[in-house]
Structure formats: C-alpha cells, structure tokens
Image (cartoon, rainbow, N blue to C red; front, side, top):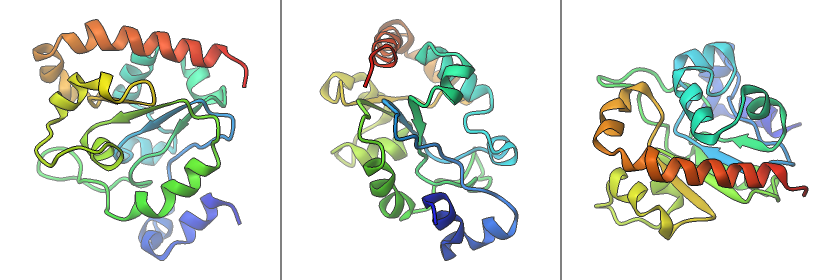
Length: 192
C-alpha cells in the first residue's frame, strides 16, 4: 500500500474519501524544492491539481517556473499541512486540521532525500517548521528570512486576498522574490 492509499484509508480522512476526494500532495523522490502550504482550496480539491488557481499562478511566477516544470519535472514537491480542503470559514478557508502534519510529514520528507529548499507558505507551515515565539507575526517572520535561509524560506501566501499585504510590503517582491527565483533556478539546473 502506498502512502497515498494509507492517507485515503486513514479513519481521520473517511469523510473525504467517502465524498470521492483524494489527498492533494506530490512527493517525488527526486524533488529538490519543497513547498509546504496550509491546505488545498476548493478549486484545487475539485480538480485534484495542486496550486491550480490564481494563488498557484502567482506562486509559479515567484518561483520563476512554468506549469510544466512545476508539475512534470519531478524536482518540485508540494505537501500541505492538511491534504484536504478544510471548508469555508467567516473569512477565507478553515485552518488545516491539527495532527495531520505530525502524522504524515516525517514519512513524506524521509522519502525525498534531495530537498535543498523548503518554502513555507503562510503562518501555519511557518509555526510548525520554524522555532518561532508565539508572538511572531507573518510579516516579521518573512522579513527575517535570512535567519532561516537557505534551508527554509518563509513567504506570504500568494493568494489574491494578500494583495493589500503585498502593496504594504513592497520589499517582498523587490528583494525576496528575485533571490527565490535565483535559488530555484540554481537548484533545478543542478544534477543530483
């Protein structure tokens, strides 16, 4: 049984499996770049294609990669904090369920020995993977990216909902995105 099948068979995911939903992730053994986000959006869950929305278009632009490289190169992995769309909240989507990353991420990470850069998208992934104080804000964490670089890169979610944040924080696209593109290009051009 593959880890994909194990996740589907997990009793914690029974309602999603019953609804006909598959877990959304990609963990090729050849991956060099790993993207950890919060959870699939509804469009992504319905199509079964990760980052298949406006957020994904912006993320690929920030990475400097085409859809073909993103989906077919085997060099980019995507593991969300939860593998299923969590539902709507008052503002945006509900947070990822607790316990999912703890249960599945270690096995997925162990199957990808060549990861050299992990991009942590949003505060859920950042708080889980980085040793942050409870008072840490997303803006401060992203601004302090040098502290975690080159293993981790904390970034804001590329959702159109964050257009106001991006306008208030132009340094992100002016300073961090070019470094990100350069690093991704270097990693994807090197042989394992």
